Image 1 (cartoon, rainbow, N blue to C red):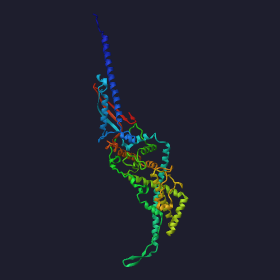
Image 2 (cartoon, helix red, strand yellow; image 1 turned 90 degrees about the horizontal axis):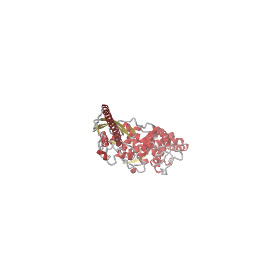
Image 3 (tube, one colour; image 1 turned 180 degrees about the vertical axis):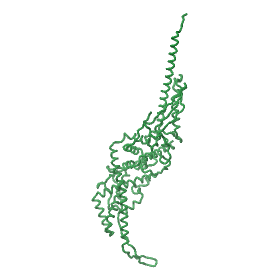
Image 4 (cartoon, rainbow, N blue to C red; image 1 turned 135 degrees about the vertical axis):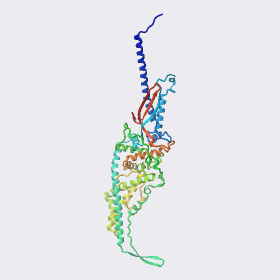
Length: 496
């Protein structure tokens, strides 16, 4: 038999060592819990981002989370429930194979998850949509295109201003010419004319009328016709699709989110606006490029004009094009001495035939404006036919003939497309630049809603139910008596 004993020193040392070991073990447990909570919270947030709307990405290259998840009810509680489910799944040891036979030293569970904020797609007039669109487009466009757009924007803006002056001048010329003719007719002596009545032939006095024979009168009469009849050969081929504006973003009360996120860069320059417009032209349809996915067939025209039907949107764009082209063509005619000589010859002859030489200046300008208008109709027809039209004409690019002006619709050019000048899309780029950016963005949101609702299971899709970043707080408890709170902010290209 051997005797064994413990010294007091060893007893005291073992107590201290055991306390240290237990303290270190508990400290390790607490830190493991914190690390696990952080990993699980980050994983859950990334999983939420992975639930982006598939059709929205496929059709418009946009990443947004639809908080309705395909149901009729869009609410943040749906996203909160998804976050909590992801966290609970990752805290659980079920299904991890052999680990199940060991004790869970953390015993974590999620008590609740709450969204503190979420940036909705339509916040601040769609700034989130525009941000993603610009990011998508940044690598696809060259600087030369931006320079061309800026130069064309200045010129077209000047023509649009000039067109208003020309329309006032045209109306003034017509009014003064009519007044001169009416005044002259009143001063002419009455002529006697025999007419047949029930009582036989009777002689009456008739005021003579001045025969005008002004080709501008025929052209001006066509100004009252539907503009689409002048520039579109087959009206039956047009889209007449209509919408109910109150069903879409710009026509209803929207759900508001938290707005801009400090961590994200938002577009605020003219160049970024151009990139946004290029995105629109890449993704959306117009008269010269239809898409099967679209409800409205003239989507870019809708973003500029904002009418509730394809016909009205196209009509608005065509009217605008006619005014701009008329201004450019009238300015060219004034600069072309040979064409002005033609106009003066015709106006002089007509004035002499009417025996009103003093009316020659008015007749001259009425013909000038009418000829510019006829050429403008040809220009717009070319643009809609995917041809290019020079901003300012030259003698080689001028198409209409003064002598054919009275029957101009029979002589429209049907030749091949020229390689120089501006296309219909180029004018749409300019019109987008001249339209308020917030208006364009929100109308794009309308278009996106229209198209996504056509896809299966998305009949109730709303852009103001879609988020691209969110901040949440999660309360987690441990079976060992610990409670923790974690806060995270996540989004596409946003992490904190």
